[in-house]
Amino acid sequence: MTPFGLFLEKIRRSRQLQQKQLAADLGVQACYISALEKGRKAPPSKQVLEKLIMALGLDGQEQAALWESVEQSQRSFQLPEGMMLTEYRMINELRKRLGRLSEGQVTLILDVLALSTPTPANKQRNARRIDM
Image 1: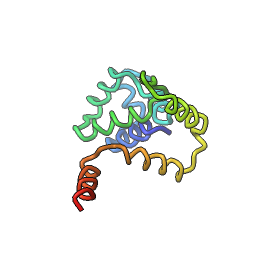
Image 2: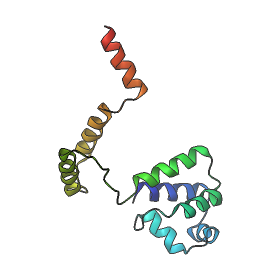
Image 3: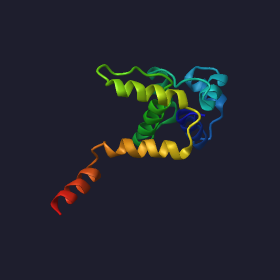
C-alpha cells in the first residue's frame, strides 16, 4: 500500500462509500479504485484527483493531505540538474536498498535530512545557541 492508497481508502470509508460508488462518481471502474488503494497503480492524473476532491467533498486540510500523499507515492522522479557527484552516489545507493531498509535506518536518514532543513524551530534553537 502507498501513502496515497491508504489516504484514499481511509477517506472513502469515512464517507461511507463503496469502491463501486466512488468509481461511478469518477467515471472509472471499481477495479481501478481497488488498484489505487492497494498501491498497484500510481496516483492518478491531476484531472482525476480534482474529480476526487469534488466527489468526496474534501475540505482544505483533507486536500493538503491528499496532495502530500500523492507526492509521497510517486514511483519515479527526475533528478535535478547540477547535482554533486556525491549526490548521484547517494541516490544510487539508496535506490539499491529501497524496500530493504529497516525502520531505524529510515528514521536516521530522515533525521539527518531534517538537520539541514531550516525550519522556524531549528532557526530559533540555532539562534539561542549562538546567543549563549
